[in-house]
Each structure stands twice: as structure tokens, then as C-alpha cells.
Image (tube, rainbow, N blue to C red; front, top):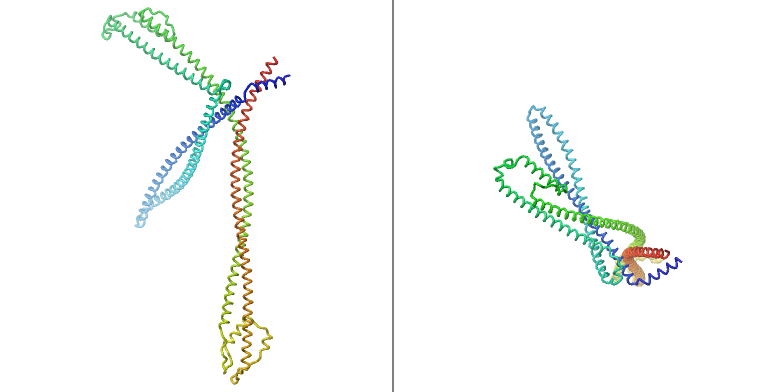
Length: 575
């Protein structure tokens, strides 16, 4: 039965409250919570700024003290230097006197002892000064660092304060918009604790101002009454003067007897005691009747007004105490809420730290991989460059050899066979050519054996047959030389082609490595962009977590309110 009643009551509540009113109330509660949270943060930041300013002032005071100490030490150093110079002059004078032959050995020994003591004292003082100077420098460095930290902290806190103030303004604008939009039942049902507290505070302040005005008016009236009393006393005094005469020339003893004076004094004392002890109804036979009645009436009215004002002030004090207790309770609630917020922030910070550590590990791994790849690429690039250099060296050597061969071939073609001398039958040019041919293209041993022996003496005569044979041999040798030159050209051309192909391959490899290097750079840039995206995503998730936590707190409070209402309703139904 209880479960059925609970479900019916929940359905009735859901049907009775419109969706728009619930949404507006939730939004209002959220905004109020955000406003209170930002207000608390603003107060905390203000306190932090004040603390930082206090620390800055303290550091400035320490700096001034250290500067004073430094000045004192500098003065001491100047004094010590002056004494040192004075002692050095005395030493010089003593030494000069010793050289001249003065017999003041005792004085010289005492001076030396004093000099030794003074030097020791100077050394100790110089060491102390160096230590103090070092400490002063260290303190200056610490002070500059603290100043920088303080300025950075102040700038950061000021920026946070500005952001919070902007946020507070935005929330106030939203709050005003919601207050304007809330009409009808929603405006009557929604609770406005802050506005009510402000109203009560304004009312109390207005009441206090009124009471202070009343007190001031009463004081003015009292002063006026005192003025009236003084005027009446003066009038009585003039009457007495008219009756008695000059008081300066005549004493009271001359006018009145001692008994009458004592009675007057006693009556005056009784009157004063009656004013202090609220016994105005005592006997005032000696005073004039009109004056006594006026004094009595004025005193009673003043006392009644004073009692009223004091009672009202006590009531206002009670109200203020109650209000302060409520404010303290609100502060306690705010402190609990702040502790909960701190716990949530700590959890978020731990999660952020874990994510940062994971991201750092991944980044380090990626950096290590990319560094290894870059090292491999650089090593391959260096190898390729070395190979290219070797190939270029080979190409240069081959070019040099090719030029040498071309020069030799040109020399062979340009040089013509000279005529044979009839007397010697020898030709130096032919021998040189044969020697060159033997050096460049050595012949086989069979060809050397097949050559015929020719007598080259003085008596020998040239024969036409031998000359023709020599010409034919030269022609054959020239043809062989041309064939060899062509073969060498082909061989070196083939080598050059191979070398050019290798160079092209190395160039293509270099281009490939350059492209790979560019790709690796692009990958690194893309990973950095991914890292930035991850950081922005982490910030967004943190903001989302905060928003969800706020929503959960508001939902919990709403659910608790609904549960309390349902329990009350169930209890009433059971009764």
C-alpha cells in the first residue's frame, strides 16, 4: 500500500509542477551555487593578494634592513682601511728610523706586535666582510626571485579576479533575466535567501539609523534642558544677588547662619543623590517649588525616553546577534561546500596528473622512436654522401686518365715518321715511339723473337726492301694503335656510364631520404598538434566534469527535498 501511495504521490507531483518551472528553478539554483562559489573564490583570491602584498612589504623591509647593514659594513671597511693606511705609514716611519740607526728597539718591537695584531684583526674583519657581502648578495638574489614570483603571482591572481568578476557579472545578468522571466507561481515558490537577507540587513540598518537619530535628538533636547536649567539657576542667582548683595564683598556667613548653610548643602547633596539613585520623590522643601517640579518632570521624561531607547537598542542587538548566527551558519555551510569543492578539485588534479604522465610516457616513446628513425636516416644519408664523394673522386680520376689518354693519342696522330739517316741507320723518334708503345701496350715475347736482326753499322747501306717492310710494319702498328684507342674509349665510356648510373641512383636515394626526413618532421609536427588537441580535450573534460558535478549536487539536493516531501506525505497518509 505504501509503495502504491508513493507512486501516486510522485505522479501527482510530476503532473502538478510544470516542466518550465522546474527547469527555471534548477537553473536558478545552479546559478546561485555558481555565484556563491565564485564569490568564495573571489574572497580567497583577495586574501591571497593581501598576503602577497604583506609578504612584499616584509621583503622590502628586510631589504632596507640589509641595505642598512651593508652601509654599516662599508663604513667599518672604510675605517679599517684608514687604520691600515695609518699603520702602514707608522711601519714605514719605524723602518726608516731603524735604517738611520735609531736605538728604539723596544718601540719597534711593540709596533711590530701591534702591527701583527692589527693585520690579524684586519684579516678577520675582511673575512667577516666577505662572508657578509656574500650573504647580502644571496639575499638580494632571493629578494629578486621573490619579487619576480610575487609579481607573477599578483598578475595571475589579478587575471583570475578579473575572470571571476566577469563571470559574476554574467551570472548576475542571467540571474536578473531569470528573475524577470519567473512569473506567477514560479516566482512565489522560488526561494530567494540572498535577497531576503539583504532586505533584512537594509531594514536593520535603517532602524539603527533611526535610533541613532533619536539618540542625537534626545541629546540635543537634554542639552537644551541643561540650557534652560542654567538660565533658571542664573535667574535665581540674580534674585539672590538682589536680596543679598555682592557675594564677593559679603560672605554667606554674613547673610545666613551656619545651620542654614549646612541645611542648604545637605539639600543639594540629597538632590544630587536622588538624581543618581532615581529618588526624585525625596523632600525638596528648601528649593523653590516651580524649579523642583520642572526638574522632576524633565528628569522623568528624559529617563522614560532613555529606557525606551535602551530597550529598543537591546532588541536590535538581539536581532543582530540572531542575524550574525545565521550568517555564521551560512559560513559553516560555505566552508563545508568549499571542502567538498577542494576534494573534487583534488580528484580532478590527480586524474589530470595521471593523464599527463601517460601523455608524457607516450610522448617520450614517440620521441625515442623518431630519434632512432632520424639517426638511421642521418646515418644512411652520411653513407650516401660518402659514397657520392667516393664516386666523384673516381669520376675525377677517370676524367684525368681519359684526358691523359686523349693527349697521348693526339701526340701519336700528330707525330709523323722521320727519314732514316744513311750513315747511322737509326731514328731516335722511332725508338721513342717504340719505347712508348712498349710501355703503354707491351708486346708478347714471340713478336720480339720474330724480329730480324739488322746491322746498323757504318758500312751498312740501306736497302729499299727493308725500308718498305718497315713502312708496312709501321702501318700495321698504327692500325693496332687506333683499334686499341677505340677499345679504351669504349671501355672508359662504359665505366663513365656505370658511374653516372650509380650517381643517379645515389641522387634518387638522397631525394628519398630527404622526403623521408620531411615526412618525419611533418609527423613530429602532427604529433605536437595532437598533443595540443589532447591538452585542450583534457581541459574540456575537466570543465565537463565540473559541470556534471554541479548538476549532480543540484539533483541530489532536489531529490532529497522530494524524498522529504514524500516521507511527510506518507506519514500524513498513514495517520
